[in-house]
Length: 159
Image (cartoon, rainbow, N blue to C red; front, side):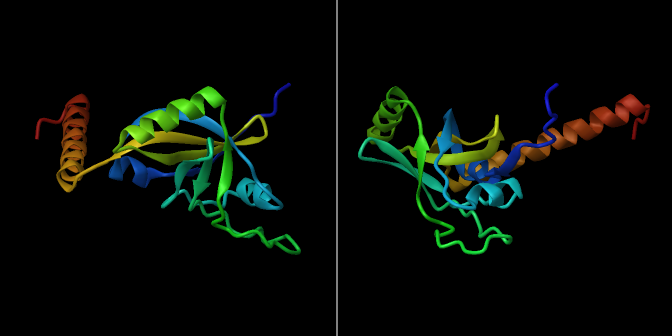
């Protein structure tokens, strides 16, 4: 009998969808040290401001905040240290090729557990301009308004 998992998602980067046009995504393992796993299991992490870079044919995650685990006796690892991502060589080469073409960044979107392994979903992202952000907000507001109207009609109201 499988153990039910309520919510394996540790952190989401909602700001990434606001600031970037997200493209292709990959699931990558993440190399953690010490009590970082316990801190993640406690649901304490932030992906905001995080990014990944290809260095020496390896992908490294920078700027992701995993705070100190409160029950640990000592924790000398930096909370924003760079962490290695685990991907297949062909995937790394493909990502490196697309990033080197220009205009794309690698952004962490989701941090979660899968079969007791910490995983990060990374995406290729292209920065949005200010008018893109305003347009996205306007579209979201229009969708909300149409949803409100539909709900009123379903309830029988005509006002």
